[in-house]
Length: 326
View 1 (cartoon, rainbow, N blue to C red):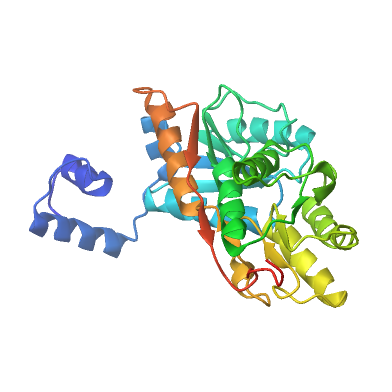
View 2: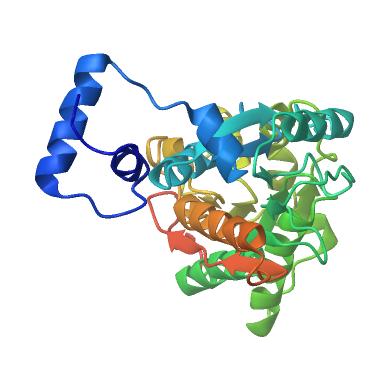
């Protein structure tokens, strides 16, 4: 119908070679008249690629993971790749079944946020670990120690010396690194973070976002101290938002009575009252790094780094201010 060779049509459809503009127009007109659709299954079979990537996340009810999924899906779509999104519900046993299912579906590789640092699920597909790195395996995460340090530097610059921490999941490496970075930056300025200044939540489990909310609402335990903090660092925005609600219920004004800082910069953190000072995890950069590392694995030309750290950024909003008695 277009009056051209089959090979020319193939070049046009697959972008595998140059085709004259006039010829490409005739081919496309013929395709439109015939209602032809490319058989993606056949194409992938010939190329031995499915052009699809599995994404396993622990909990899509957690705003951070939902926003990370959005960033990853956008980045994959820009590369012409499809996303098979799976939720483990923070269940390590389910993670293993999901990995088997993705292998059966012949995805090219997997981007994997484990249910917890104790998770041991591993498949045979090329895999990049996100947010919760695996020692010796290609991983992409925020520089959590730097993020914690940024919080400490900000609070110290405002004049705070009595500070406390609401730490989500006492066993998680990521939140532990945030607290370590925070405490180290304090020590460099002669301020010690005592054990009693850290209120830690239970290990992650099913519905950990609910546990995060419960931890935030326990903030009154920190405020009952003989020397209550003038500033509180919550290791996630969900914890911080829950803490802010509880502080307001107890009659505390933020930041007049106590400053509050979160971590993640989920979208809602800019819209709570007062808007939350937080540390932004660059989800778009994490997505690009992870997909780039996966492409390196798939090409086999060059091994990706064992762990790539994405630099976080402090976002100052209205929930922090100098203490009343500096």
